[in-house]
Length: 201
Image (cartoon, rainbow, N blue to C red):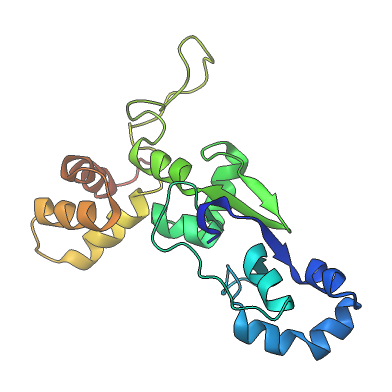
């Protein structure tokens, strides 16, 4: 996560600022640097750092702390966005391509999305209230088979049903609403849809 859309830097630019080739910097300086400054996406193969923290490290100064807590302007990568929506990271990338999610922006080859946009999409998926569905008067394509078709929360609802045994649906819905946001009633509808048999081809 990039807290509050703060400026960032990658290792190639860090090496350039240090005045050494990237290969030299990685061999000689990177181990000590990485001990002092944590990558903003620690589980990604692409290492990106907070610019202020990187500059402080290069200057031999104390590393400033990052802002704590969640903020609407945080930038999330595909894995973090997937965690918010309750889907797989590959699904997030597909949704961005299909227009279900905003395109986001790319920083050093990492696609990121603002937290507020992802939480808005989670709360109001297409066809669900404000901001959902097609603008009036546009398109005449096929209508959805049901209101929650392609909702990213359906796999989460289906998994909860599979794991719940004899637990009443309203209790499952309340637990999902507490864990993932949204209303209990919305999760009851998602559970109802997830429990329906697939239409025959």
